Length: 443
Image (cartoon, rainbow, N blue to C red; front, side):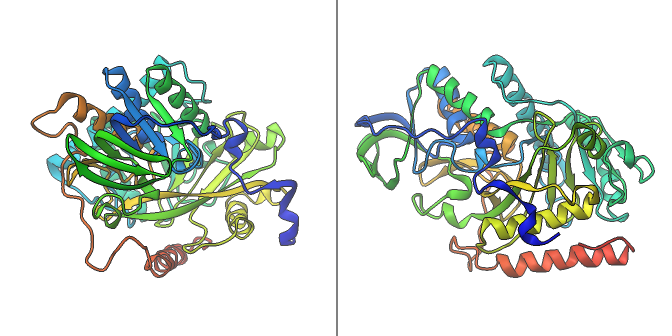
């Protein structure tokens, strides 16, 4: 098929999710001169922080430079797990061990429980499917690493995880591309933009204020708190929270030097016949891979489209180019989809800390919740909730396992990920070589 033929007639370079919830254009309004807690960043972490604060009797104000929910909160893959991805380095090993690792796993599972309880409590209609996840093994060698993790995942997170060999794999996905996999029973997928819209509505009902199209330009100490300069004037705030994740700038000291913004890309296919959808995803699982440069995919909430994502390029590239790359990867896994055209192609930024762990804490007096590491649906909501609890409860010690630990950086990194094309290409090369050595088709 020629490259020009892979695009639907109504092809768009906006997230398919926006058909279900379009980030709102807030009319310009006069901002308050004072704020109890000012939250910079209106994604999952920001609105969840505002919701918890408002329910706790505080008066938070959320500001975002773009439309509320415009960033990764309405651009991600919508996969939901509790602890499966946290603390893992790209090569598949564990970045943390011992008691800290146990605490992180338990807390990640708590984050998933909190998210599902929030959805239920506020009756958020967001296409939640508790159908589990299939983690596809890129090579047979990856099996041993997962086998060593299964008991801990089940014991500490209630993942309901089990190994699947290559013969059983056809019961999970309509593809012979992988070397087996892992079923995570306690997992699923949802509509991320509708989740965001529901959280934003809940926060506003609880009394939080939230405004998009307001850029915060400077934060400085002042008597009684902080003077926050914005594109619509100055605001005096009692406390400030940075919840900008992959879109973090230079507002708060060196926070931008502690996370690496990585652009991930997604495509949505045109609608497919029901029997074809069932043949490729018979159990409607979410799917992720064990390769270093991960691809992930799942059916749309209505079961008619495949939403396929990954890191197509490690430098700025147009949506048609990244769509063609992802389409090729999709067809390698599912040759039966070769004639299925692309309806949407888009990208969004995730934040990867140097230690591959999410973090909440305080930097030079400013609170922050940063570092989803690609698991933002659960994790950014949990971090936002955690930083709000710190403000409300003022505990003597850490509020959770992601609180208070050092957030590392590198002396040669100043916020611009100049090394990503080199590192990303190296990881892609390693993935290709691993497949060749395993006598599997290399992508």
